[in-house]
Length: 432
Image (cartoon, rainbow, N blue to C red; front, side, top):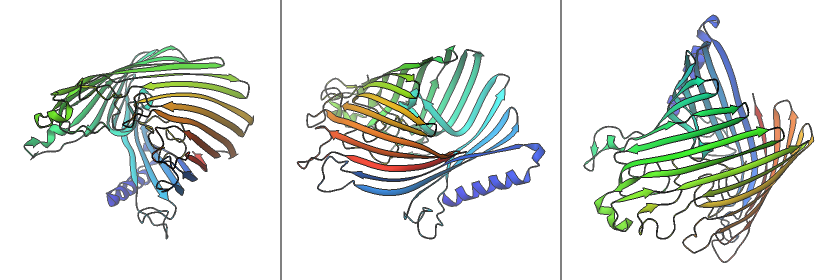
């Protein structure tokens, strides 16, 4: 795979250099960042130091687009990650000769009349990341009904089972397919409504798509119905997201006992997100409330229902710095869902102040608890304080200083030696 990545990158560069300049327009861009950070007591205790971390790392992304005509583009994005002094395949180790190249995107983007199509490996964003925010293989067909209404039809290949048979079941039946109708309706330039209907299906699911472990599951037909509303009016911005889940998954008879002798499970999860903000000169105020349902102790085995909001693989919604992945997103505090939002009730108050054109200060206060108690009967994750100072050093070069502290609740603590998680660090970044 490493050799294939390098060959693919080299081939694209050769093509870019050999095709006559008149035949296409080359577009280059990218992103780079280096982080230096420390994280302590993320387990909620300070004896074992099991997850304490001090790390320097770098991420580089390079974008190359071959624009063959006003209606046809070939888009490619590459990524190189390294931990300073890291593993041998990372370019951050001694000799700096790592060969790990990730192909993030490679797809064709073309227009037919007023409609747009994207085919290949690309980024997908569904329901603000609560359902999906990642790269995947698939397509987008964006039909323009009018200047105010767009009708995207989205397909994502979640899993390819392959051919042949294994354990008397067809590997091909383990295919997972996702189809989404995701309209965008412009009520005005700055006010949109985005309803969606998504269908996720597999003949022999086996737990290969959702992050929740469901052993012994077979045929899956899952649906989500949602709507997003976002608006900006002068100094104010506000919006809401609502998602309901339906459908279900069948159970192999050998596993009936695991699920309270139910032969299927019905999906009943839901999520609500409300936010608002206001700008007053150099200052900004913001607030957010988030609720995602969880499973109570009787939902699956007693009622045969999955009442927790279910996260497909690829779902990612960042929130608090420590509990919900922030600038330093390699781990979250114990008990918290990180960016896979489920079984959570959270509230946020925040503010930002632009001291100078090149200096911005931000502060956020988060309170979070589990929507349903954990196995020990605890629910409070805690109250978190996040602070950030952002500086524009020169042109596109930016530096962020971050500090965060979690006054941990009983659902974060894991032992008798209770301790509050905290982190601090800096990020240097540029985009072009």
